[in-house]
Image 1: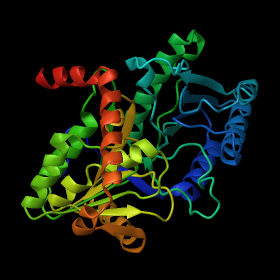
Image 2: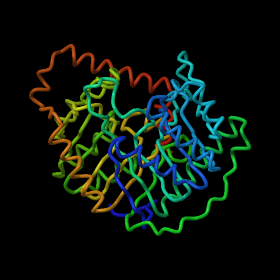
Image 3: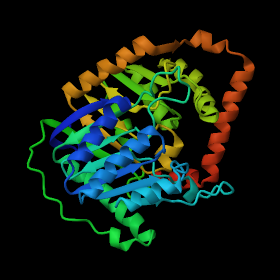
Image 4: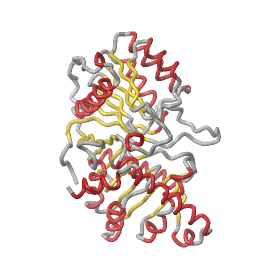
Length: 394
């Protein structure tokens, strides 16, 4: 499993847990920026966190730094136009990815969202993960912060990440009739050597990289020898993915799923639970996270292969949205992350046992399968069932 296509050696990677780690880290990077900042996010809220990050971006722009903020038209639909205009008046270049979000159509373009969460500063450091620009704590004040992760990257892989964010920014700038924003500036190459870790930057788009993230998951699962830990907010894998997990169990691999326990989005929540019976019958361990809302999209396999990013294991991430994940192959990083996830499972995971699951009320089973069917219908209406099948056949 070590190495492979796309892996780049010589990086320093720092795991960041929740907003308590993430927001101070990116704010510090913004305050140290000298040339260019690129920030992509699905959700940008005008709350205390959003205002804090906006102030840091504005400070950088006033120093002469080129600041590029790309937000999604649906995920950031609640960001007031006044906030966007305020940022632009400070010199921040703000673009919106697919701003038209009519609720009266299921056309594929409406469901293709910018779900990536990436920051790149001066070709020196990049951040990638699943954390949006939004207050870390849910609306309910008695809950702990959302459980989520990101990684700070220093080293040669930053250049790969920068090329991806620059291409997307330029494309959106052209379509937004801001051609003057489309051209990259000449940023000096970093002088720091990075570290000793090997990692790859994987994307999912609707052109050349349709299955890159899913394929990396499947390869790692099929090569697993001892343990697979997956922590996901939304877990609706297709048949091939479920068979890969079941096959790992049959080889003697322990497979652990840490999934969302609290109801945040009712349809997705119950659709995931429709698969519990099949997964439990395959010998997969399922734990639900109830301490707060689980927003993680991460995995660790055999304590050395790990992935952290924006991609859920569901049709919307794997077949529709623009996603980005970091894949790490390093025993120190993977071992530390594995221990962290195991501790979370031990202290905050509620195990779902097969026998007790079979005794759940019939109306809950019905609602779960109804939710699952509705999500599959939405996928079919998007046109991606047929298109994805064609891609695989090709």
